[in-house]
Image (cartoon, rainbow, N blue to C red; front, side, top):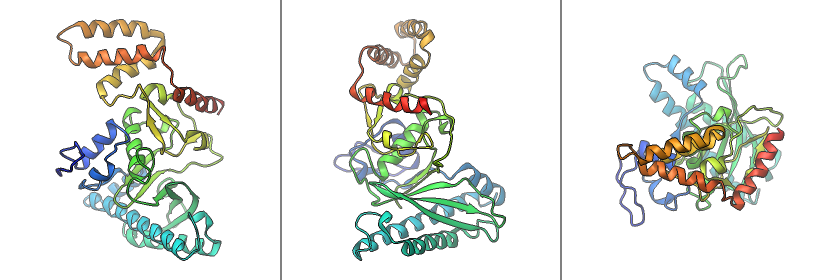
Amino acid sequence: MLKISTGMTKYERCGFSRLKKLFQTNINFRTYDEFVPAAKNQIVGNLPSEMIQYIVKTFPDTKAQMIKKFQKGLGVTAVFARGQCNRFKREGLIRFGLDELSAPNMETLQRQMSNIFHSNIKEILPANSSVQFKFLDRGATGNAFKLSLLNEQGQKLMPDTAFKVYHKRNSVMPEAHGNYAEANIATFFKRVLGHNMERSPFAKHYMSDMKNGYSLSEFLYTDGDYEFKFIDYAKLFGVHSIDALKSFIGGKIFDLGGFQKLWNFTEDKVTLRYYKKLMNNPKIADELLERFEILAENPKTPHREKILDAIELYLRQSFVQSDEINESLKIWELLSDH
């Protein structure tokens, strides 16, 4: 583990697992730029399971090295794409993002990205496989591409993914947007949703490389009809998105930037677990509440204070409703019509 000792940070250790744990329990750190670059491994998450399974089956003895090689190939491609975007700005070909680039220059960029990535991972892929990058759109913090991997027969080696290259590798906008913050909220949601992004209103997040400044997530089709379980994340997890209303594709939320804490946010896992039980079971909530109160009164019960915290959050929820939660209800009205 790597020790960190800067003036403002309160984190004594920050290796891969520690960085993941920080991101799982809290969001919007004011000190991203201090502790993230100091982490030994700045990747959270991993490749899509289909690619992991292919690598494990094809390279059983060197699977870890091949996974890292694949990730490194994405990193090299992201650094190249960011460099080209900056060059286009210097040369006056674009002012802000790649959506302004001429068609011939875009075709050249996509071909170069495909060639660079393919040359870095060609020993991993079957013979005569192809890599395809296609520009999707520009956001406030980065440019997004569709990434497709096809074998010789044109079959997909893994699902199409959204490859987001951030304009800057550090936290572009403090707290809520950018490379570090979006990796943070994605990791947080994976934990509180039980890693089941498939049945959530959010696109699946696969991985974020904070050193090379890119993320890999589920590619959502505009004509998609995705089934998911209704989840009111404002009430359950105490977070609110300032951008969700403009971040829908196929009925799912694709952008994890702009999430902020509400009054009912808790970073304690035990408190959240009891709070979620109360919130997710309205028909038996009174019975659960009585049971939890009895538990909290017993001096032999572990985590008594945390159970009481969960009870307090639940009781406050019944009569406190912030403007942010009211705003989130508009989002769920859209989703319920989906």
